[in-house]
Each structure stands twice: as structure tokens, then as C-alpha cells.
Image (cartoon, rainbow, N blue to C red):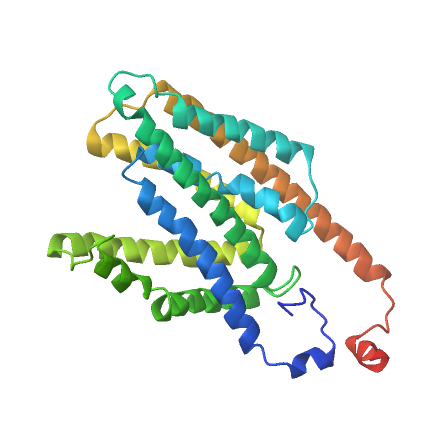
Length: 293
């Protein structure tokens, strides 16, 4: 059902065990997710938290771009305009303060960090669409089944990370490119908190993509931009700049428009599916497909 993206599967498809498909899909999607996540950790010390969050959340727009060829999603004028407004908002947040006093000396480092996290944004958008296309039940499946499968696939991602993705760590340590050591007790507490929060986010995010769409799920993450900026202000005492406020406002407006457009599109698709179901022949079933084979 997941591989074919169909609710009604001919019986001869059920003869093939799903283990190899799950293994291949998990490896590809987890690798894309991991590479995208690594860019965040590389760029985190090269640019500001607000810029980091804003550019990384551009994965929303890349998710929309990849959804067109992979998920056959239609291009819509309202979505495209909202994407344009959000991109402008991201540029305002990312580069609006580059000429402010105190920032001129590290503008080059910030630019490099923004480029690195931009690559991660593309990979993360691709990860969302690949997950929706190859690891989610098709539209119309029972919601409980979607939730269970999302958590199952999330466990597969964790298992692949545990069994495979640790291999580069000792190699990097031996070569001296990245020295690994046990964290202090203080650092370990924050790492544990981060792990718990990320597990809750990742599980909820996979469920949301499974039940809705990558675009709707991804635009919800744009709301973290203001939250991170406010948290940075509360912790460091650095006041929010005009560029952060203006760009953030544009991103929030784009989020609202994208959310409304996505909801309207889902309503239209649901209405079309109901009409097609009513008009479908009453004697159609998967056994007829078996007979034809």
C-alpha cells in the first residue's frame, strides 16, 4: 500500500516481503535527513540563531518545489505568492543587519554559514517529500494507521542511525578532523533535554506529514523563527532588530496564507474523491486486477 500509494492493492503484490523496501527507503531518507541536520551543526557557530532558523525553515519552499514532480501537487497562484513573500522575509532576516555596527567584521563568516544552512534547507525539504511519497500510507488511509506507521518509520530511522551512521565517528576522531570526548555532567543534562525535545518534535512532525502534507507541516515550523529570536533576546539581552521584526512579520503572513491555501486544497481534493467514489462502478475490486494478471 505504501510503495504503490494505493488503498486497494492486488493480491499478487502481497506475495513480496516488505523488508527490503523498508530497508532501502529508510537508508535513503535517513541519509538525506542526516546530511541536512549536519549542516545545521556546522553553521550554528557561523551565523546568528535567527538567521539559522529562518534559512533552515526555507525547507518549506523546497518541500513545495519537490512536491510538484514527486507528489504531483498542482502549482497554485496563492501558494506561489506566499512563497515569494516568505523568501523576501527570510532574506530580510538573514541579511538585513549585515551593515549594522558590530557585524561588519563577521559578515563573511555569516554569509558562509548562511550558504551552508541553505544546502541543509534543500536537503530537509527533499527529506520531507521523500518521506511523504515513499514512507507514508496513501491519502484516504485510516488516520490511526498513519500515526502507527509514522512512529514505526521513525523507529526505523533511529535504528539505522544507531547501526550505521556511527561508523564515521571513530574515523573522524582518528584522523583528527573532529575529536570526540565524553561531555561534562552539565553539558550532558542539556544534551538529554535536547534529545527528549527533538524526539517529541520528530515524532509529531512525521505524524503531521503523514496525516496532511509536507508543505503544511513545514510551514508550521516557520513559527519558531520569532520564538528563537525572542529566546535569544531573553538569554543574551540583544534587542530584536527592525530587520528581524519586519522579516519575521512577512514570514508569519506567508505562513497564514500557505496554511489557508493548503486547507482549501485539501478540502477540494476530499470533495473530488467523494464524487469519484460515488460515480465508481459498484462491482470494482482488487480481485478483478488479479484475474487480469
